[in-house]
Amino acid sequence: MRRNFWLLLMGSLLVSLSWRPLSSTDEALKLLEDMLEETGRLQTLRYEFKKYERIRGKLMLEHMTFKLRRNPFAVYGYQHSPRKGVEVLYPAETGSQKLLVKPNTFPYLPLSLDPYSNLVLEGQHQTILATGYDQLRSLLLAAKKRYANQVEKLVRSGGRLTWDGVPCQKIILEPPQYEIQTYTVQQGDNLFRIAEKRHVGWYKIMELNGFSSPNVSLSPGTVLKVPSDYGKVIRLTIDEKRKIPLVVEVEDELGLYERYEYYKLEVNPPLTDLDFSRKNPAYNF
Amino acid sequence: MASPAALRAIRINHRYEQGPLWRVPLTLSWEAPRSIALTGPNGSGKSTLLTIIAGLLRPTDGEVGFSLAGKAVSPAAWRRYVSALSPHLLPPAELTIQDLLWSYGHFRGLRLSETLLAEIQLGHRTAAPLSRLSSGQRQRLLLALTLAQNTPILLLDEPTAFLDEKWKTFFHQRIQERIQQNSTLFICATNDPDEAALFPETLYLGSHAA
Image 1 (tube, each protein chain N blue to C red):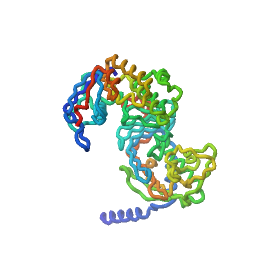
Image 2: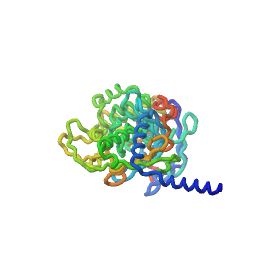
Image 3: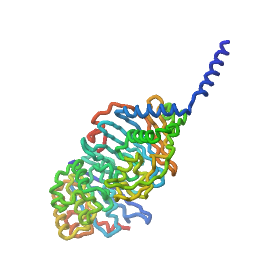
Image 4: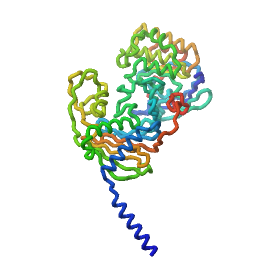
């Protein structure tokens, strides 16, 4: 009798598990909303970061550790590979708009650089100012607004999985009308401004138009190719409990464009000004 | 920064694809204060030896040991105490004069930036990236910055290349002043006999060349 009871219980559990609506759009939308809210509430973050970015057709990997404060914005990063020992700090000093970089090449002196300069952005999809989740938030909010009448076509669930030991849910965003459009350069435009206005990546515009650097000078009236959305497919692996994305993967018309993986993510760790100072004795500036 | 530097190289040689650089391996034991000119024809290994001394290249044969204030240090630690100017070790060409002055000012204690720039007649070009300077202007800037650093090790590779007579004379005076301060391990590779003559000692690598 007792044995039958357990069998019955397990049977009903199995049924209820298989009955759960894993790929419902409602669930995915709810999770997306929760994620936007939670990432909007973050104050500080600490995490290990693996970034895969398609640079001139090849996928490049960088492995970093980051500490981030959202307000006032500050980032410290340590590179594990490929250039072990490189350190970055933004801002270089309080009130500065420069990035402090400790290169691991001669003359082994930290450099204070414009974060938008070609030297800093060579081989990168993002500026240091895009570290964290704010850029992702703004492009997701833009997509939600653009496809407000067809969100059920934009968002769907991609099931459950475990990432870095954390139970996660995947959601997939597929802008229904992703396409390459044209954009006519206006007075005062540069690639960063156009990318910000359109909520797309400046690297993507650079790639589409065959520019060799993001600081190319644009004359008004020039017609550029610009994507309609940040990506053709965006896949988010979201920590079920904390509602923070741990993997962000973007595909465009050519395939994988970028993939960002977060490991050992700490939400709101107690970070102080010293964590964002070049005078921190643990840093090598 | 006033920790005396010492270098010991025991039977070192460096093998490139064509074979070893030197016919006879080199053994050196140099301790600051010491100022030495490295001379010898092209291909005699002056630049390679400087790169080894800078702690940037490990020779294929032999052993190199570095020490600061009597304590053995790793090549990585040693490199932080080296000021060097070499055509093989140039800062990124996108950097501006201001960028460089900021770095050398904050991290090498250079406070002379304005005087220094006025002296080498580049005060009007602080916003220019290195790529926009003429080869003479770039050499003046980098040489002045290298000489102004008060590090225990100072290495120069053909420091007055690209300079006209006027600037050559100017910098030969500066080099002589550094030699007279007599506090550093100062090594200079040169093909210019006048420059080599500034140094109390010369190591001629021509007779070692393979």
